[in-house]
Length: 74
Image (cartoon, rainbow, N blue to C red):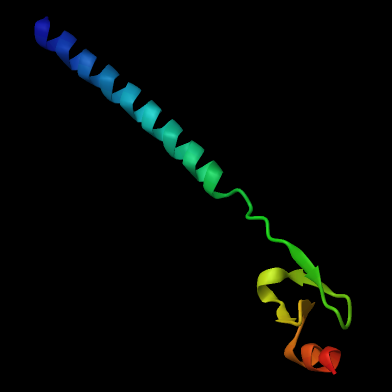
């Protein structure tokens, strides 16, 4: 009877560890999927809004393309 109770204890401990670890992993996945917010800027030439990381900057103004940067700077 002692070996059966040890086996049941080990199974119960394994289930508890699994539940705890899967809960932690679920929280991490949910956190990783949160969208990253990036500021939007308007093109100084055509007023198109685009992410700041994709914009071309010249003289403190933002442009959606190299052509608009050239046209807006002149």
